[in-house]
Amino acid sequence: MRDDTIPAGAPLTGMVFAEGERPVFSPGDKARILARSPVGHYRVPTYMRGKFCTVEKIIEPAAVDNEEEAFGRNAGSKRHYYRVAVPMSELWPEYKGPATDGLRIEVYETWLERVPA
Amino acid sequence: MSAHDHSSPHPEPAAPQHGGDYEIMETAVRELLVEKKLIGPGEIRRQIEVLDSRSPALGAKVVARAWLDAGFRGRLLENGRRACEELGISFYDDTQLIVLENTESVHNLVVCTLCSCYPRPVLGLPPDWYKVKPYRARAVSEPRKVLEEFGTHIPDNVEIRVSDSTALVRYLVLPLRPEGTEGFSEEDLAALVTRDAMIGVVAANPPTRSA
Image (cartoon, rainbow over all chains, first blue to last red; front, side, top):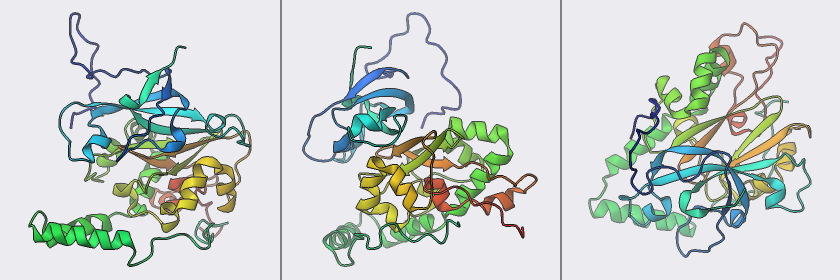
């Protein structure tokens, strides 16, 4: 595993990154968790699908997709997980607690779509 | 109230039945793997030993150190896994650890709605109530009610943050340091930190008067 105690420097001018190497989302980005219903192993709970969220943190290092790994495909392309914030009121319209109450969950990059700010 | 004497909020949890389908499947797969010589009984026993060597005492040590040492606290919040490794706690898998700091304005609660993801390297095995559906479903939909059932009242001006563990990341709650613990040693502080406080269902225990 990469030693992430040493922060990566800013990329040199002219540096070209491989596809999927850099995180696509940044903290503060608005996104929507996709609403697809795949057959087989998945890590996005049903109650989260289709919900709007805000990216809070990039989970380092990039990792293989757990959903692929479940079928033994544990090599190849890695992407980032993101810790995203979803208000309780977005999940449960009838939620009775304070509007500030919220949920945090890690979502793989392929499950997020960008929402125009 | 003490974190030790609360009764389970779910008197009759839908705990896995012994001899149920999943247990039979687990036994069948395990025996097949051994028969095919993909793993040996020694490896299974070794992994049980790894898990048995983990208990909430490790997490309590981490919390107590964070209360006493601001530098360590900073590193712990920055990268939970590295900071635990710094104290000699090994992570035998690829999971990361995010430590969630409770403050006067934020209370954290941890759940795994899909199964029973839990910070095993620092807490050991999860309690039964953590693994059953009532807790898993209700912690994300009515967390305040669940907390009340544990005897924990969170005022409305304190934000509840529920973290649902699903993939790579495990969570450990860093509870608020109880009042009246000035001058306490790391050992004395650790004794106030229960497993349930590190899941976020209760606060750390207040110091007893006799202490």
